[in-house]
Amino acid sequence: MTEPDKLDQHLAALFARLDTRPDFNARLLARLHVEAQKDALAAANRARREEEARYRAARRELRTTRHWKNVLGRLLSGECFGVSTLELAGGAALGIGAVASILR
Amino acid sequence: VLTDSGIMDLVRANRRDEAVAALLPLFRRKVFGLAYSYLRNRDAAEDVTQEIFIKVWRALPDFDGRAAMSTWIYTITRNTSLSALRSRRQHSSLSDPQVLAEADLVPDTTPAQEAELDRPALLRLVNQLPAKQRQVVMLFYMEEQSHEAVAALLAMPVGTVKTLLHRARAQLSAAV
Image (cartoon, rainbow over all chains, first blue to last red; front, side, top):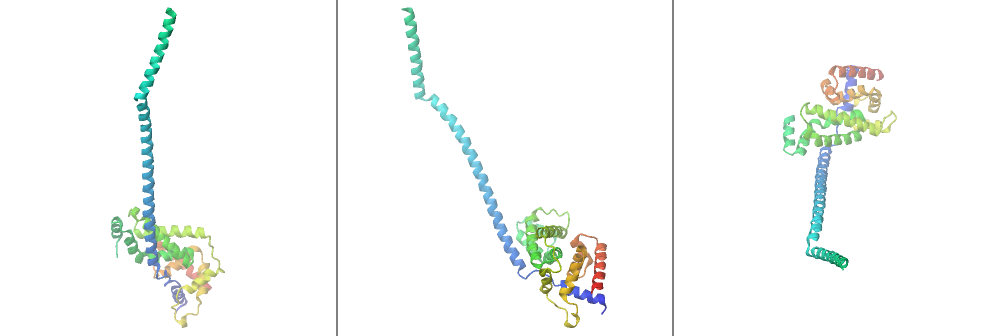
């Protein structure tokens, strides 16, 4: 056997059987399973956060609408109408009093 | 054995785990060998090989088939191994006990009468070669002495592989 042949043989012996440990595939598939679960959890969290943001925006919108409805409602309520009438009557009474005092 | 399109059919059917399981017998050893040729540490190479297959699993839906799947996987392997090498900042020296211990991790199948060259010494000599020569030597003897297989793994022309191997063998012969 020539020297180069021997060198080939030694190098082949050193590297030809180099491989992963026997449980490599099982460990990898277990990790993929964990990664898939993590991904699913992350997707669920993302969806929940998006839903919460949508809910908050809708509530804000609703609160603003409700606020203006309440303001308008109050203005048009009987109570408000009564106060306005009293104010008008008071104003008119004062006006009539002033005119009467001038005429006298 | 599944073809690239067979693998992609599994991915489209939302069966990525099965797709990776089908890729393992084809690529596990090649990917590990390539990672090992960069990292020169068995445990690190195995960890990186796991990371590579997880990356492949994640990226499979984006594989566009412009290149062969093997080319795509080897590119991921080279990039991941290089980043791992950079982050480890491991410049294994000849006195690194980890490097020397590697020689004992590969089972010795050489008949006793021919084993006059001791394995740690030979590994030390291989580790002394310039990086590309060292990678070519490791992969050539891992890959059943195929120049084409080594060229595909390292994304270099077959002629370059032959030249690097020739120089490496000359250097090793002289040292032995």
